[in-house]
Image (cartoon, rainbow, N blue to C red; front, side, top):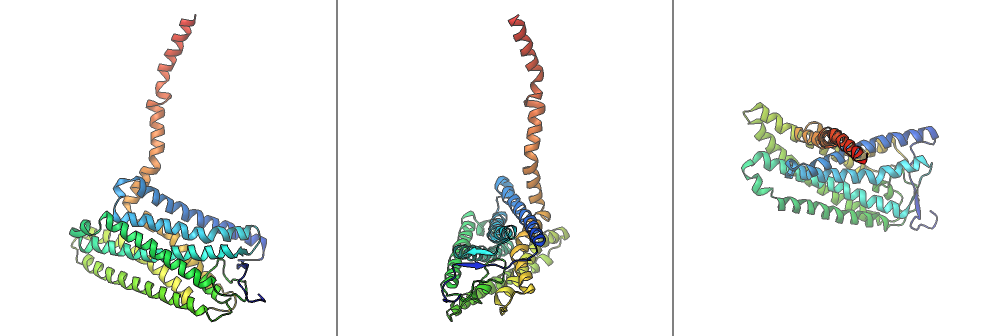
Length: 337
């Protein structure tokens, strides 16, 4: 922009200029979004309505599902709307909102996955002290710290990015991503946001260290278990968590710490899609398909309305009262005669 001022609006990256491919992009993203939304909502519903799942592990899993829904809802619907209406425009305030909320949910994922690793560490390495350590109050305090610290870092990142003057308004990404926005600045003040990203990387590295230490101790204890079934159960609860966290860390760090290129890059686009859409999609599948308690809770949740309706129809409903209703009709007819 010629006056080197704040951009009034930004132009996002289009996946294609061909109308048919734009519609294809809408359907693909809609399918991924609905799958992510449905899976995470099922987890939230199962944990909420099944009292057997009112434990710290599932409480953290429910919060993770909330963060996953939030992260994809910030970026995917806008991208689909742009492709559907053949536009690239996003307002300045909309871009600010995307950066703030996405950074909030992304950072919350890192912190909450670290808390979940600590929960697994206490449950496996110190099972006798688990109820004393992971109390209801302690879980609420940890989740509150995750929300507040992520909120603070989201404010810092969004303010550190959008207080800068922009020399261009063309963002080489399908949503407002901080590394791509920093390429548009025409001031040395962008180093402040670079410093904030470096600080965020320190937090992520600290989370990685805590998780690695937790899992080293976990695997040491698990490998020493005499029961094969016990080892299998412990690995089934720990390995999915480790896979999700590794995917999220590697792809997001690659996107945010890699030197930015001047033009659009297929590699940047691919990495961004992986870290922004794959973990929220995989989390419900990993934690539900491999978790017997979640599957039992979902079968009860999804089966109870159908079973209750059938029971009402066959016993306490209209079908069960047909003879009685017939007798009452005959009696009234006779009296009228």
